[in-house]
Amino acid sequence: HFPVSVGAGGSVVVTVNRTAGINGVLSGIFLGDGGPPLPAPTGAKATTVVPATPSATTVVPATPSATPVAPAAAPGAPRNVIARKNATLGSTLTWAAPAPNGGAAVAAYRIYRSTTSGAETFLVAVGDVLSYVDTTTTPRVHYYYQVSAVNAAGEGPRSTQTRAVAR
Image (cartoon, rainbow, N blue to C red; front, side, top):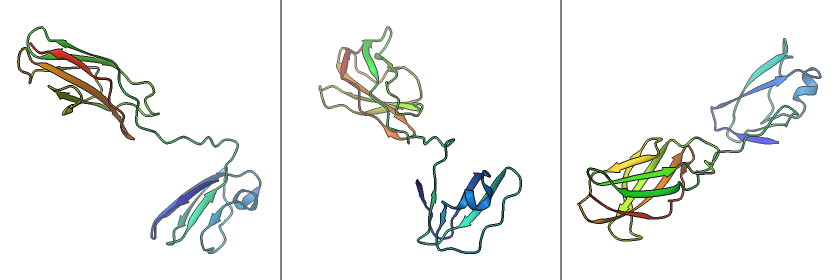
């Protein structure tokens, strides 16, 4: 069963394949506080919009063709994070995408930096890229970095710490 809660004034769209007549298809669907009977579907599919009440819950029974999709989770930490002295200025960070990605594409990465080990704070967010050049550094200063991945479900854990001496 897949319970669906809808607030007052909302609606639920139920689409079913007609397999055993209207009573066979809709016998397992609870539509809140009752109401008039639904008309028989015409054609191969029927779509019904059901108005919601404050306490209405619609339960749609699983069918052999229904495959539940797990909700996305935050991604894992980026892998193989490396910080190096940049050829001209600052530090260059590179990393590999996290595995797992949480079931949703990585949309961005967040980079954390500090001059003290273990004290990294947010520096910048970048898109779905696998490198970043930090040009806001001071030459010959040690910088510590961590990177996290972000998908539709949120931000994942930070990577292991890496460090570089800025140019």
